[in-house]
Structure formats: C-alpha cells, structure tokens
Image (cartoon, rainbow, N blue to C red; front, top):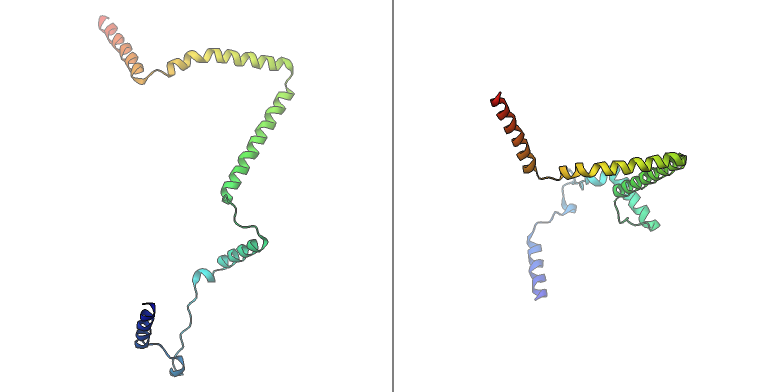
Amino acid sequence: MYSEIQRERADIGGLMARPEYREWNPELIKPKKLLNPVKASRSHQELHRELLMNHRRGLGLDSKPELQRVLEHRRRNQLLKKKKEELEAKRLQCPLEQELLRRQQRLNQLEKPPEKEEDHAPEFIKVRENLRRIATLTSEERAL
C-alpha cells in the first residue's frame, strides 16, 4: 500500500513544473532566498547567542520567571529591613518606655471592642436607627 502511494506521488511530481535553473536565460534575474526579518534582527541574534551560551554552560532555564524572582527578592529584603528596624527600636527603648507602650496597647485593646461590635452590625439595622432618629426629629418639629 505504501509503495503504491509512493508511485502515485512520483507520477504527480513528474507532472508538476520544476524550474530548471541551468536552462534559464542568463539575462533573467535569479531569485534570492528571502531573509526572515526576525532572524535578521540584532536583538534576536543576541538572544540566540545568549541561549546557546547558557546551554553550553549547563545553566538551562530557571523554573521561575525573572520578574517573579526579582519581586520575591525585594519582598524578602523589605521584610528583613522591617525586622531590623523593629529590633533596633526595641533595643533603643529603655524599660520604662517599653512598659508604657505595653500599657498603652492594653488600653487601646480595651477601648476597641465596643467600636467593633457597632461596625459588625448589618447595614439595615444602621439604616433603621437613622430612620428612627429622623422620625423623632420630625415629630419634635411638629410639636413646636
């Protein structure tokens, strides 16, 4: 079966017109192979050269993109700086200042929970309270 297909292709190939470069008129312009603009660009050549060098060195492609590596590096550096600043701030404070800060934080924590309870109320309850206030204000104005 395969041999039959090959024979049919050979017959078709004989029918197709092939340019015979030897028989061409020497006065005609000979065709040139077109250049691929991507491969001809300097940036593509430099990238290809760099990839070949990395391949020869055995570096290969990294599992993470460069942008992700840079962002992780920045985050890590920021966290380290933040921790260093906190440690320096704690070290520079005297024991009295540390105790005052602890007391201030405790007082702030005791004051915050009532505010949080109000913030967690559903919105319709807040609107209802506002409507009650408005209703009481209008009834008072009528009485005057």
